[in-house]
Image (cartoon, rainbow, N blue to C red; front, side):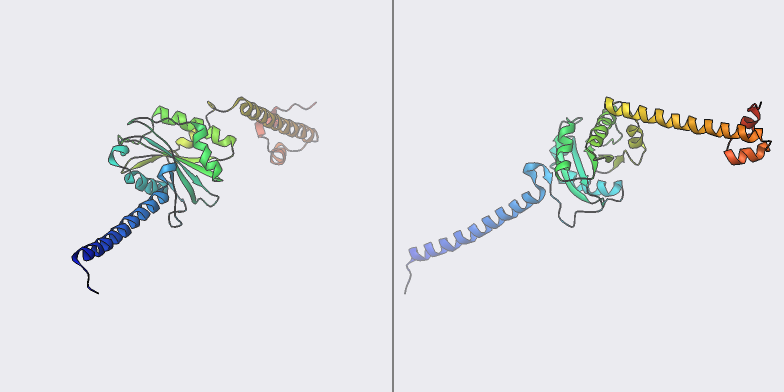
Amino acid sequence: MKCTSIQLFYICLKHIYTALFYIFTKNIRSAKKQLLETNILTMNIKLGNKTKIKVEGSVDIFLVMQQILLREQKVDRGREHFWTVSLDNANKILSIELVSMGSFNKTVVVPMEVLSIPLQKRAVKLILVHNHPSGNVLPSEADKDITDRLIQAALIVDTPIVDHLIISENTYYSFADNGLLKELENSIKYVPAYKLKERFEKEALEKGVEKGVKKEKKEMATTMKKSGLDIKMISEFTGLSLSVIEKIKVD
């Protein structure tokens, strides 16, 4: 059967349309897949099995977060981001959540929003990460203050914060590595009143027990001294110093 030029034109057009449709839908599927992999709409970075690395140090977190930061458009890299990294019991990354994105030098961080996703993911530990677009990764007083506050909030829900990283495109600062996390853990600025009461009561009880033990040792040393035992032997037996034993008066 012979085809007219018009029929040939429509046949060619049909094939071209089919090819374009295939290319278009393939690109859409590819873009959708990429979108799902990064979960941009929910601001949650979904990690594949290969990306679920075991965190053995701050550098492991930095290398992951550096890639996430560099994946951002250049205009957004100039804004502060605040992320949470949820860890399981084996120190493997469960999820990375972008909590907030602010201006060039600050972002709003609310404890409830910081802890929300990690608790849903059944996180056992938590690492905080935020970037400094300026490139200076040393923590500001505001950085220290929000970390102090979040440490106490996380302890209430039994999900301790094990580090806070400040990152740039090339380097990072770790609160844990520099001893700052330990310092903030000892702060009582944001410790709830009932927790402070429990802590003080425990310390008072421990001091009371310590005093009681010391009193018992002195009473024992007094009895032994009355019996005429050598003070060196009494010291070895009770653990009291020779000077303390010498001061004990025996009637």
